Image 1 (cartoon, rainbow, N blue to C red):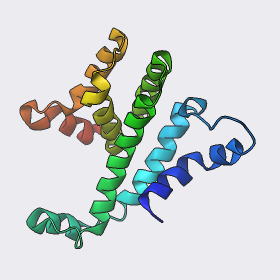
Image 2: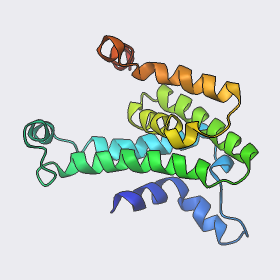
Image 3: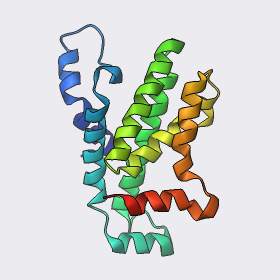
Image 4: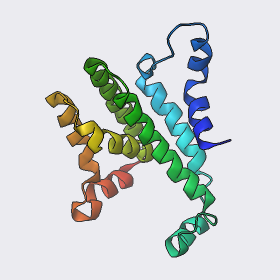
Amino acid sequence: MSDNSTIIISMFFIALFSSFFTEKPPSILQFKSSELAEQITLMDHQHFVRLEPGELLLWVKEQNEEKSPNLVRFTKHFNAMSFWCRTCILTEPDSRERERLAGKFIKVMKCLRKHNNFNSYLAFLSALDSASIRRLDWPRSVTDTIGEYSAIIDFSGSFKAYREALANAS
């Protein structure tokens, strides 16, 4: 199963099926943030459990995609999640709906953090903190929240906040 089909099937199978009976395709706003985070975490888990220590060590030494296929898929999944988040927001023409979508992704991030899913948390954070998204006109509440969520990846102290969050994950 390809990475893109995994994302679509895992999160939107029911919604896509129901879209055949409605005029409008489903929106991320129709789903509970906690349920989205749960499904995203399950997808991340599928990729994570396939990683083998040997692959990671080989990657450090050789950076050969053929010798680290699971790591490559894991990375592609991260990039797909980030791209999906950016695309959902940037393709929305109405500024109020863009704000609602950003708020939804922030809520999903909060739930991902509760699941200790730092992979997709950081994928969404990278999307929301990307130049294309930051250029949009956001209310202060959205920019402040993104700033708060970005504190976890502050590189000062060799990513001390991130290392502490990982250490405290149960």
